[in-house]
Length: 271
Image 1 (tube, rainbow, N blue to C red):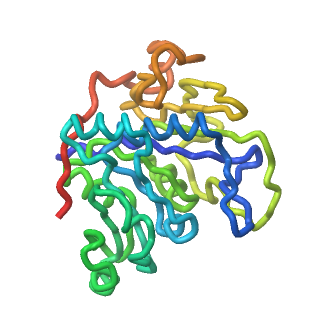
Image 2: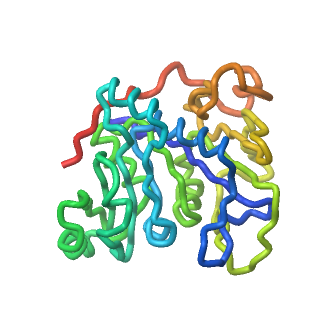
Image 3: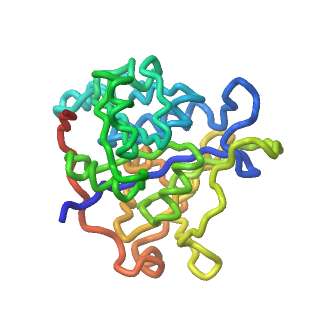
């Protein structure tokens, strides 16, 4: 059985748990220093995933921004930026979106099988469309990524995708950044939606690390037995790690402690 990718979920939200406001312009939750940290996490990932709603609303490029990080990836035999991944139930994606028009890495679009033919006709050579079953599940998506040699996946949103990954217990570590303000709009998108989550009052998630980054705070949670405690995994150098419990403290929460190794990154050629 192929090991599924190591999943890091990265989310920035307001104090009251919103991803964005309701205005026409995207509400920035983080700051320049944290954007740079996330860029490092991207550079260390094999693939980046956002939902189709995020592609439509935010039009993200999903590229590694820093020149030195892109050069490092190229020296490792990789594309300058990770493979881009999205999932759609409706098939409502424009080939003119930055997701499809920027960068040199492969692009994967997962959809229900009854949407695949029309979506392939719409996107043409802009992406590889992968048909799953009657509906897209994140577990099936991860299984397919594993078969393509993807060893690590960075999930960046939005709320529906975040909820699906967390509720299905598919996340190895969570990077939760909290912005120093409230949104307070009932119709604004929430970081998570109602669901039955594995972590409850009787099964608390393990807080592995905290760090103040300017005016925001990063909370890093270990959500699986595969959790990699290295600061590099969170986009931070060793010298800047803080509030990190030792392996013994983590093993009290994770039944088998820390892993001895993680899947190695591979060069991925998306058909």
